[in-house]
Image (cartoon, rainbow, N blue to C red; front, top):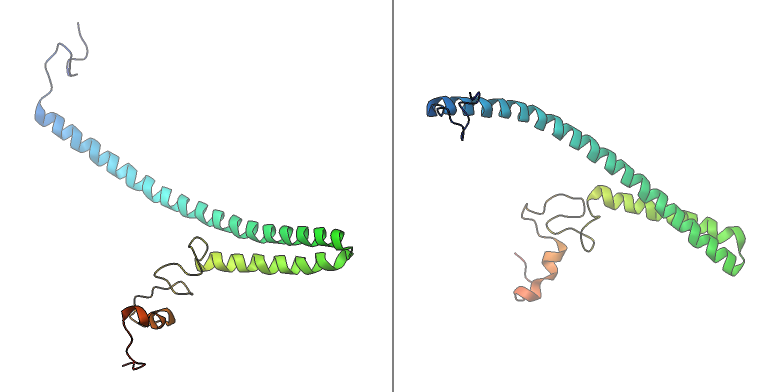
Length: 151
């Protein structure tokens, strides 16, 4: 005797197509309900971990710049025999570099090539408002000179 009469490949009769469609719709509805709750929870977790990662990067940028400045100052002090002065100077230089790195990170200028990301101005907003920038004005030779007349 076979207990799984409804399974495909078994000897028993196959389930009705309408019954299968109803069970499939019910399973999809249960899956959508559970996945939407999980997706909301996943997005919140992802945002939390992104914020923690951002804070860790800010801290590591500052500490790395300070350690680098101290190291360079210490090495120069030993080489030039100027013992605390260059280390103190490069401590401030490293601190300034760390603050500048954090500023660039916050402004979104950390991963692009060059000073600005394409399509963004220095403050991080879009350039899509139609205003000309200095870069647009300096590109006059590529589009043809207009004899200094602007209108």
